Image 1: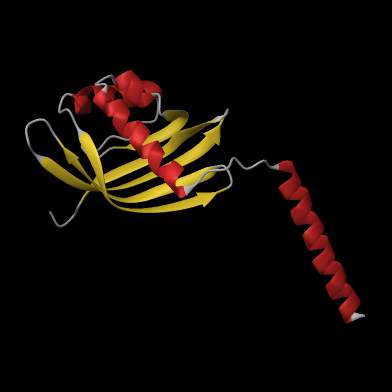
Image 2 (image 1 turned 180 degrees about the vertical axis):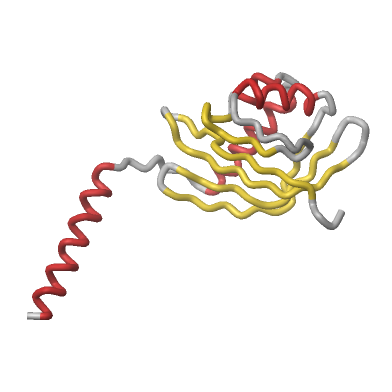
Length: 150
């Protein structure tokens, strides 16, 4: 009797997993392609156009920027932050990264350094979360913070 109940539980769990898996289509993405999403964002910085940078973010995204204490929750707030940030002519370089991939989502976390036109450099910790939305990978969370020991 116990064996029958255990077998039934396993079969019902497998059926549920298959049913759930059948309703979700996961967009394929590789670690290299996730890394290219940062490159896309970094290239948009080089345009010096805050609207092009803000276009990388989902409408509901949150930006917790490196050089501001104010969370940016709307497209307009993100674009306004980049209006200021782009005046420094930033260029990001990844120093260390860890990428994790799930179904229609990916996370890229690590350490990057921004170089600015005046020759200064600013190392920071970062996390980007991406979600596959309407056929495109969009930033849903961007958190960047100064290194505490520098």
